Amino acid sequence: MGRWWSPASVAVEPRSVQLLLLGVALVAASFYAGTLFGSSASPALVLPPSRPRSPDSSRPKDVPMLTNRVSLTYRTKPVTVPDHGVDVCPLEYNEYVPCHDAAYISSLKILDRSRHEDLESICPPREKRLFCLVPPPNDYKIPIRWPTSRDYVWRSNVNHSHLAEVKGGQNWVHEKGKLWWFPGGGTHFKHGASEYIERLGNMTTNSTGNLHSAGVVQVLDVGCGVASFSAYLLPLGIQTMSFAPKDGHENQIQFAVERGIGAMISVLATKQLPYPVNSFEMVHCSRCRVDWHENDGILLKEVDRLLRPNGYFVYSAPPAYRKDKGFPLIWERLVNITNAMCWKLIAKHVQTAIWVKPEDESCRQKNADMKLLNICESNGDISPSWKIPLMNCVKLNKDKSEIQKLPSRPDRLSFYFKSLEMIGVTPERYEKNNQFWKNQVHKYWSLLGVEKTSIRNVMDMSANFGGFAAALSNDPVWIMNIVPYTMSNSLPVIYDRGLLGSYHDWCEPFSTYPRSYDLLHAFHLFSHYEGRKEDCLLEDIMLEMDRIIRPQGFVIIRDEKNTLSRIIDLAPKFLWDVSTHMLENEENGREQVLIFRKKFWAIV
Image 1: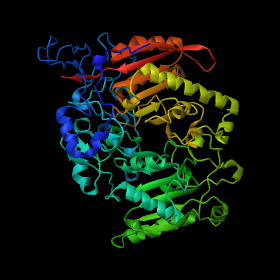
Image 2: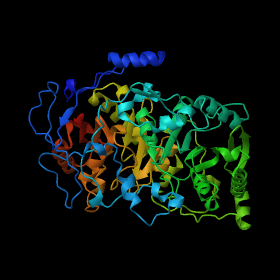
Image 3: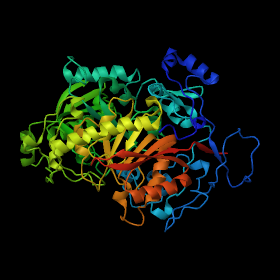
């Protein structure tokens, strides 16, 4: 069908960025010469209310002036979208994260701040949420492509110097002219993540292999910083869910997603993390600022919930090696808690300690009988971990037949798992679904009409079994697979496949910064939320999609015919361009597919 947007509106980007690796000097030269990274197309313009809406002789030719107005607009009931389009938030709201709004959360009195409840996702009531399009910052540029973005991003896209000032000595991030440079360091690996990862491999295999040969496929990185640990695990074929709170280490998750590394805002505080039981072969903490020894080790019991049997807990922090201040006492309490859970300390070297979660439950049952450990009541692990309070107990896997030995990646992507059987999916249906998404993804790329390297950060907003993500596994992308907690609990299947994701409720904004994703995929998402309630409307979900998609990013929507018709009518008011296509559905029929592209616009 060909391209459906004006080629003039697309950023001119390179086919190759390998020359960039010659050094920072070439990076700087290429910036000033306007090559290698390319130059962004001129954005469409939105005028603030103080400027008259008249032709602007100083703006570039052929750059359109939009009718949307700059106004700090809050959600109303009922929701109304003006004829001139959804209002644009003032420029100072360019980093607005609705459910991590410090101004609102600071006004709440009944929060356990000693346990960092104030850093959890706390959404204001609808009437206190903005209902306007979040603008990009001044001089925003189309992000640098992966894999160069692992090491360099535009300063103007994340214009915060605090991390470079306080963490530069640990090689988190350095300023390089118009760029941020990420040397690959961290608090406990300032000489580079590669050296540190090699050391962890030696510690887990008694110097006979690496983390991959140790059986690590999926890692949870707690307090991830700018996610360099995750970035340098990728060559080993290891997928990492990285998270950190929105706290004094300003914008660390924003840096991570701008680099093209999978990450989200989250915190270990008073609620379970939004991931299933038995999901990770490793949980990693490198000076992650978590008080594991407090509250009877309840946070370590959450780690135990998330770890697979024989999974590793990696702890790189002062109590593991320092003998001053109160560190020895903290270490003693950690050892007592982990002993009670029957974790085995398998290595303690330099600044790192590594424990293994047991597969045999006899030790834990014995400690429970001795009142040293609380055992959780079993609920069959069918409830999604969404806004559930932390539990001061551990779950026993008494029936070893429930624990399935998983193949290595990439075989996991198509393997039939017991978690599929538990939600009523037959092998035949699973195979048909996998083949369907392979075909659909091939057609998506053809319809998008862009180089695959122009898309890096992808979110599947209703991921089902993860077939869409599995079909993208050979492309240079990472996928955040979201399973709405009100849908079938298929997230354990996604993790069994070696993929990553999170539970969520699309009646609320997602915990990420604006402009996090290049592509959003919504498969029969809107119809699922129809009729839920007045404060969970189609317009609310579209507004959130607009917040988290990047300028010139894509949104693919498949849904009921009436729902798609409403979205088409609303799209121009959200400054989305649209093309309409017909593709086959899972029942071998045909259904309408909408592909939107967010306009690149700016306040002037």
